[in-house]
Image 1: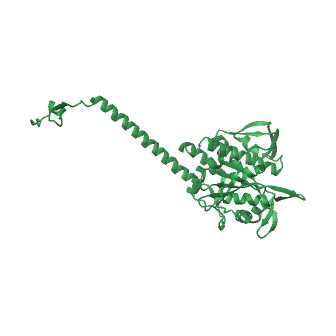
Image 2: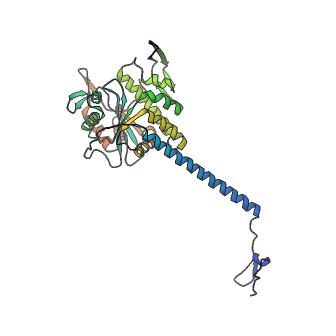
Image 3: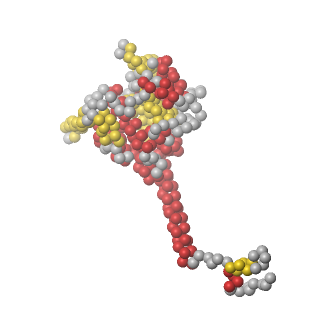
Length: 349
C-alpha cells in the first residue's frame, strides 16, 4: 500500500477499501449550498429564540397581572376527607345588593382527568348559618363576610373550599370585547333597563333582547346581567348563562394557551375578580389555564335541587347530599347523568 501525500491534492478525495484499493470519495455540497443551509438554520434558531422570549415575556406579564388581582382575607378551614387529592374547589359569588350575593356556586376541577363542574346553590335556599340559625344562604355574606359564607357552605356540603373568588360584573363589558363577544339564547324577548345620573338628572335607557340568539359584547353584556327589571332569581340565571358562554368560548378557542391572547384575557379577568389572600399568583394562573375543564365539553353544570315549602326554599336533602358527595369524589358528571333534572339550563327560560 502506497503512502498518501501529506499535501492537499487529489488524494484528499480518496479512501481505501478493505482490500487496499482506492475508491473515489463523493464530493461535498457546494459552498453556496452550505451557506444557504447555515442561513436557514440561523434564521430558524433566531425565530425559536424570539418566540421563546415572547412567551417568557407574556408569562412574566401574566404573573404581574395575577399579582394585581384584588385580595381579601378569608378563613379557609380544612374539612377532614373533604377533597380528593389534587382536586380544587373554588367558591364563587357575585356582588349583588348590599349584604347578599346574587350568585353562589362551587367551581370544581377534578383531580385525575380533564373534567370539572359548576354547582350552583340558589341564593334564597334556607340553610344553617353558623351562629345565626336558619337563614337564606345568600345572607351569610352580609352577616360575616366571605369567611362566614365559606364556613356555611363547608358545613352544608362537607366539601373542602380551597379558594374564594368574587366576580364584579361591571367588568364584563371589557372581557366580552376582548374575547369577541358571546352568544346566548333567550326563550322570550327581554327588555333591560338601566338608570344613570348625570348633571343631577337621572336618565333611564332600555335595551331589548329578542327571543332567540343574542350576541353580547361591550355594554350589552352589562345590560344583560344587571337588568333590574327582572326578579333576583332570574338575574342569577342570566349571570350563570353569560359566565357559561364566556368560559365555553375561552376553552373552545384555547385563548389561555396562546401567550399573547392569554395576556389580554387574563388582564380582563383580573379586573373583574376579587380573590382570597391565600390564592397565590401561580395558583391563579394554574386555575385559569384549567378553565377548559368546566368551559369545554368536559364541564358539567348543575343546580342543587330544592323545593318550596310555605314560601321558603329548602334543599331536597336526599338528592343534594348525593350531589355534595359527587363533588368530593370527582363524579359530578355521573351525578348529572343519574339526576338530569338538576342540570342547569344553558340559557334562561
